[in-house]
Amino acid sequence: MNSYRWYRLGVGRRPVKRAEVLALFEHRPQSSCTFSLIRSDKTGIYADFSWRHFVMLERVSDEGEYFEDHLEVRSSMQISFRGSSTFPLLRVVDGGRNIRVLIDALEGALGHEFFFESVPFNMDLGASLESNKLLDSCKLVGAKVTDLRVADGVLSRVEFAARQGMSLSLIDFLRGKDFKIELMKYEVLRSGIRGGISFGKSGRVLVSGALEEFLVNFVESEVNAAS
Image (cartoon, rainbow, N blue to C red; front, side, top):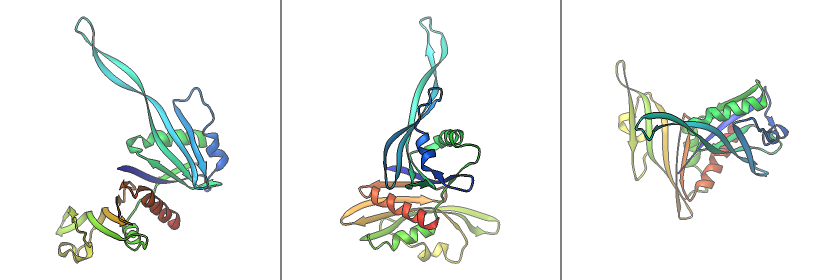
C-alpha cells in the first residue's frame, strides 16, 4: 500500500516553469537536501528528494557510563512535477510528516513568492469513482463521518465498514442528520483485478492492489479537471 498526496504549487500567481524545476537538479554541495532526476516525459518530471538529518543515540562506554551520540542518516521520498512546460501540481509518494522538509527546500530554491497547498478530497471524488465506466464494480466498504449531531450540543465521530459495500444515504442512523465525511474507502474491480483506494479531506490517498497505477491516474485526472 502506498500513500499519495497532491499539492498545488506556483510562484506568485503562475505555475512553476520547466526551467525552474530543472534548476533544482543542479549540484549544491553545501545543501543538506538533494533533488535527483529519475526521468522526464510528457506527464511530468519524476525525481527523488533526499535530505540529511541526525538521529540521537544513547550509547554505553567501556566504563559503563551512558552518553549521547548523533548518527547522520539520509531519508528520501519520490516526487513528480505534473505537467509538460509548466507544472501546477506536485505529486508526493509516502511523504508523511517529512513534507515540511520538501516545502522548505522548494521555497529556498524558488523564492519567497513560492506557494504550496494540499489538495483535499470529498464526496465528489467518490461519486466520480462510482460512475467510472472503466470499472466492473466499485463498492464503498468504509467511511468515517465527523460532526454528527446526536443530541443537543453533542457531536460524534462514527466509522462504518461493510465488506459487501454500502451507501451512506441508505443508513438510517445518518438519515436527516448533518455530518461531515472525513474518509471514504472503496474496493474496485477491473477486468478481474481488484484494488483498493481511500481518501479524505486531509488530502492523503491510500492505494493498494494491482490497480494502483489506474487509480492514481484517475485521482490525478479528477484533480486536473477541478483546477
